[in-house]
Every structure is written in structure tokens, then in C-alpha cells.
Amino acid sequence: MVIRSTSSPLTPELDALVQQQMDKWKVPGLTMAIVHGSSTWSKAYGMAEFPDRKMTTDTLFSTCSTTKAFAAAAVSLTIDDSKNTESPLRWDTPLASIIRDDFVLENDYSTNHTTIEDALSHRSGLPTYDACLSLAQPNRSLREAVRYLRHLPMKYSPRSTFSYNNHMYMTVSHALEQIEGRPFSEIVKTRILEPLGMNDTHFSVQEVSKDPTLSRRLAKGYTWDVGSNTYVAEPYMTDEAVTGAGAMVSNVHEYTKWLRTMIYQTGPISPEGHAALVQPRTVITDMSDLVAPPAPHQLYALGWFIHSYRGEPLYWHSGSWAGFGIMVGFLPSKGFGFAMMSNTMNGRHAEVEIFLHLLDQISGGPAIPRTIGQSHVAESRSKAMSKAETMSEAMKRLYPCLPNPPIPHSLPLHQYVGRYEHPGFGAITLDIEKGHLGANLLDRVTAGIMSFQHASGEFFVGYFFQPKSIGMFSGYYKAEFIIDSCGFPRAMGLDLEPALGEEKIWFQRK
Image (cartoon, rainbow, N blue to C red; front, side, top):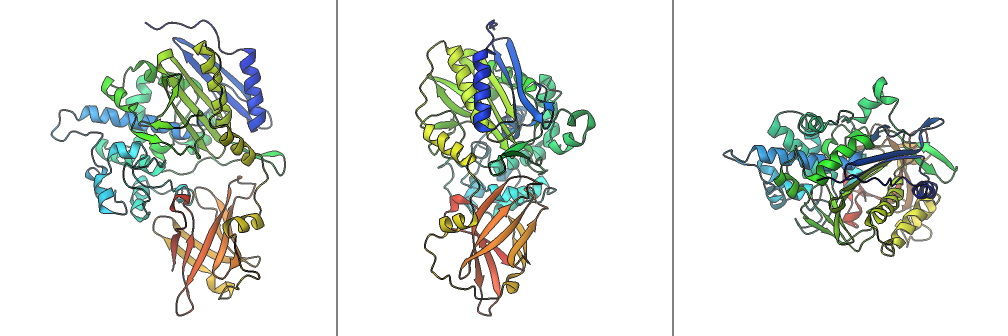
């Protein structure tokens, strides 16, 4: 029996907390829906788009990585379908057995032994490679994106380390398409969304933004610019291959239907599917890159993080892209769930504080002191509210012991000009702009410019940035050129993946 909660959590105390957190993290707008038993509450705060479009509870958002739970659920349904066939699909089925020509990793062992559950629980051994997504061509196919993986260095032994990886969810989406013979979006729509009545959930923010009947409800994403003390509008995600890793567009009302399915373990997912989706698969001990409830560690299942709240499992997942911050979760023992969506990436920090407050409320006990992880939260806020790092600061950080004076580069700058290619990261064409090497990357998923500042010898600092008319993303990278015996620049290396340490991604001169 489902008990209806009659006490609304939307109290003046909650309103004050929401406003305080929005001010703290510079959140333009936030909307939330709360389910408790058979009751549902929702409320919207702030702005969906400046200057005057207010947030509402049916405002649409890129829900980003919260798509992953739907991808895993879709796999569970396909597994159920195959139970009585000659070759049943299982969670431990190797991906290479499904998409043998397309799924190849750096070494044979990883290729042949990486399973569906390895991919969905972020334990494949492949590092994150966010830069690979950012530098991708927006119109690449899902198959092309999967085939690029063979060119990316592995970092960890299989099943040894949690390493969040969007590419693996894209790979599972591709495998699912090959099994079902139809697009991933159609699979999820017909098998999950339509049975749940989620008719206002979509699969391309680009398509939604161009639809006159939907675009008027689509939130505009922003990032706070400390230097100018203003919000900068962010572009919508353009990657057509992102699919099960983060393609969905929805609103908080829609997500309450999904939350109730997960809380009460109802259809269209089978009981066996529900059990598999929330079974812990990976232990997360490095919390430095997670916006998460404070804890010494978290667990990961299939599309869900697992946190222990007062000894009870809390299943949750965040989603983010430039301009969007999403947080979704449920506490089955209390029949409680929440969906929170905001139009800035830092909104996730605010949402964590808000849902922890709500959990304390429904638990009936005193608030839990939040000592673990607070230094990480303070560091995140300091970084978010600090002015952008300058080139001179980045130079000292990346190269702390440069000679004085620096060693000149061995060739005139114009001889470094040319096209450099990497089979996994694509091509970067260098030219000279205002006396510096640079590359126009405005045609990529994260559109921007890369400028190179000489450090010493063949070492440079690569500065990727977006003009503020486009967005706010920026970053500094070590860059190095290899000159061959003929005095020709043979390759350019960039440290695009932090997990690889000093190992660079090498682009060959063409």
C-alpha cells in the first residue's frame, strides 16, 4: 500500500534555502519536483531565460547524464527478451561479441573481456576523455564515435578502478541499436517512455530548440562570469552521437513518473531488471571530481550512484553540460524521490544541499552534520567564483621550472603551421594569428579557439577558449612539438587527458 504524505515539503524554510543556494552558486533558475508516497509537489524559482522568461515546472532541460539510467533500463528489457533464445544476452556478455567490427580497445584483453556491465558501471579501464568529446565533429555517427575508441590509450586494468566514461554508454547504445535494429531514441521511447506516459521527453536538444512549440519552454543555459559580474549564455549540446550517455530533454514533472517506477519497482522493467539496475558494481574512493552527497566513498550500479543515507541506500545521479545542472534520486525505504533541474552547471552543488535538507526533513531526525567533503565543496565554490586563470599563471603551473631566459623554439613559427591528426581526437590545423600559433576549432562539439604561447624549446602552452559570444569554457594544456632529423615538425603532443599523467596525445603532422 502506498501512503499519501499530507505534509508539503515546500515550506518557507525550503524557499529560503533554495534562494540562499541559488545566490551562493549563481544559479539563474531552478525547478524541482518531489514525490513522497503517492503525493507529488513541484515548484520553480528564478529565470529560464534572461531578461524576462520565468522558470516553470514544465520548463525543458537537457537532462544530460541522467539519461544513463534509461539506457541501462533499456538493456535490461533486451536481456529479458532474449532469455529463451539460443544466445541469451547477459550483463556479462562481452561487447565485442555484439559489435565485433566496431568495438576495439587498445589491447586484445580489454577488447575481448569488456562486458555490458563493465561499460555501464564505469570500470572498463578507459579514462574519461572529456576532451575527445569536446573536439569531436558534431555530426559524426554513433558508429564512428565507437570506432574511435581503438585509438585511445587505456589507463587502468579492467574492473579495477571507477573511471566515469561517456564513451562506454555510447558504445552500449550502439550495441543496443544493432540488436534491436532501430535507433536508440526509438527503443527508449517505445519501451520505457510511452508505457510510463512520459510524452514530454525528447532526444535531441537541437531538435527541441528548433521546434517552435517546444523551444519556448526550453531553458537557456548560463555560466557566471566573475570578471564581468554577469551571466554568459551557453550553446546547447550539438553531439549527435551522445545518445545513451546524455541526449535526453525533459522536465521535472516527467521525471516523477520515472522515479515512481524505480521506487516501487514497477513495469515496464521486470523485477529481475530492477534488481540488476541498483546492484552495486563499483566502489568509488576518489571523490575529487564528483558533485555528490558528502561521504568517504560512493558506489555505482548501472546508471545510478549509491549513497548511504542514515544506513539506507539512496540512489542518485547528476547530469551536467555547460549551462545545465541536474540532480535526480530516490530513497526507496521512504517512498521518496526528487528531480531538480537548473540552468547552470554549478546548480548541482545547490541541488545537493537542497535534497539533503529534504531528506533530513522526511527522516524525522535531526540534521546530519556535513563535515565530510566540505573542504571539496569550498574548493569547488572558490574555483567557480574566482577569476579565470591567466596565461602567466598557467605557464607557472604547467612548467614550474622553466629556464631564464627560455630556450628559443628551434624553427620559425611559420614552419610549425600545418594539419596535425589523431585518429581518435580528429585534426587540428595550426596557423599564425597575431604572432602566435593558433587553431580555429569552431566546428567542434565544444566550439572554440586554441592559441599557443611559447614556454621554452619545443614546449608551449595551448589555451583553448570560447569567445563570450559562444560560451565560457576554457582550459590550458601542455603542448610539445617533435622535430625530426630533417628539421621538420613531425608531431604535436597535448596533455588532453589528466588521468594519463605526463603522457600526451600525439597528433601527427600531415
